[in-house]
Length: 126
Image (cartoon, rainbow, N blue to C red; front, side, top):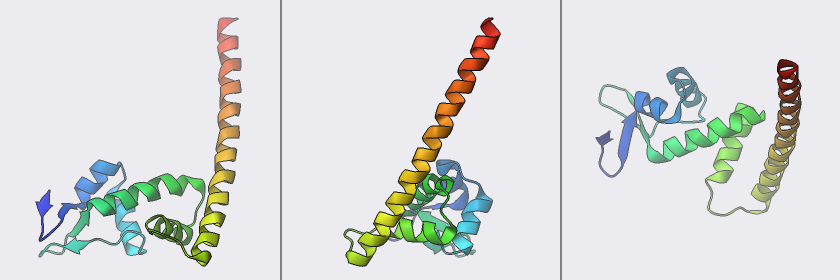
């Protein structure tokens, strides 16, 4: 880890290792503005902060819930605010509704997987 003037930073490889995300994905998120680098080395290499790592983890957990990149950008920005105005509350509620719907779908898939696993166990023990 490298220390710049006030904050600890890391190169993209360390960020990838810490988050389990690929370099390609992190670069893509930077290119589309979802995860801009906090800085650059003199050689032009991207530097990331602990806050960037936290942002990337939020993105990682939100992505499987079917949000578009534009929606991800909005949800992550909302999560980073200290307080919400009326318009932001409305957008946050819509995002929450989306998360709840997707969670319900995932729970149903897990229930189906449990049933299928039980049927296969039964077949194996017959």
